[in-house]
Image 1 (cartoon, rainbow, N blue to C red):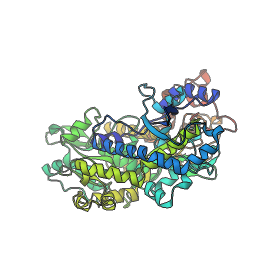
Image 2: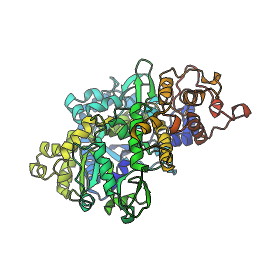
Image 3: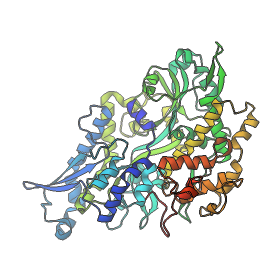
Image 4: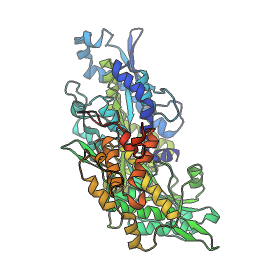
Length: 595
């Protein structure tokens, strides 16, 4: 259960980058420091040490971790054979490049990466700056572009290396879900390359529910055909603050939009879109679908209702993160969104917890999230032998041979019913395949088929921050009873000025808003959006954020809030009323990226 909960919260990179930027800038100026991997001569044996940020924890007693460790030990056993087949002759023929080590007797050791620990900081980035970067980096979707554009990742498809090209089509198909190619095969420095490999299978977002709570309140269990109306009705029926029960788990804070984005996708909207011709990302979540999704989400979180004792209540969700895990374990929360792993479905108790796809939106669309853990090679690896060994580790870690081993450990450890039936069938465990919770395999397939990739474009982590601002504003309006009950009037209230913002979002990001006074009817909204998107280097580079304005919070307020958060103060009185004007323009001819 802890693994599931840990996967629920998205990662935020921008605050870390602000902290680590001076160190990494120094790294870029003085040249790449040595990476953590090394080659050791131990007697007559050559030992290649690989440091991996992908979890390697020999001490953890969990079955899932032990399955991973079994696969790693299998790689270590296979390494001499892999090396002899693919590398030995090449190394011996070129001692200038590969060294004069004893290549006839070789082994490999995989070491866990610990790194520099600073609260709130991205450990990988600090390690890069400190010269102790792991050879194998952990990459998630939203930080992938920053790592690619800043040359932290080594391309995996260089012909001279023979890495990706030596994987058969069957190997690649087993490892990489087709939808994930758009995330790993991207334009970066030097052109388009494959920069990372998924591991652990695809992750799909689903709806978990507590069967016991549904039964207590005599609410029908969710089904594959559930809609938003069904979800809202169940949340209302399950919410009883006097008894401490709530319909659904949501969240507060700048990453709250992770909980909302499912509804955006299910309404037919999207977060960002990419223009391949211009290599630009553009925010599009302020669409009509975005307004519709925000309206529904606000009902879940802040709709006014009166209980049987005449007490005014707000919403049908628990947003208290401090004891969320315990509330869920005690059966006090009816539903929550969570990731489901392609390899290991879950360690939850199927007697208490059910699982269905995310509910359908107003027009029958379903928009969960498709995600995956990824691993990449650090570009600063200086020894080609270390890089080759690190690649082979990455290749083996989630190969068919490794997944077979992991499945065996899971089955022998009593977790066979929680393994994806696809792998139970493939690796010869049909008796456990029949024990899998009914409907879970179908739920996973629907989640992956209908899932949208988590935003992975340039500075997409900032998009999550910006999406949260109108969510917070909408909730405050609901709590202060400023939203009408009539659906049409309510929709109009939410979408006020959204068309204006949408039209502004279609213009080029270089549009000179600074020439227009902030007192102009659209200057407060459209111009500030463009200043954020086109001029704020730490913002959505070369993008335009089409954020609903008007009742969702003026764009100027969003700009000022963002400016304050980034610590950018106006240098003189001319800019005091308009903090966006204090932000320097982009570098001429360069990217507006994080750095």
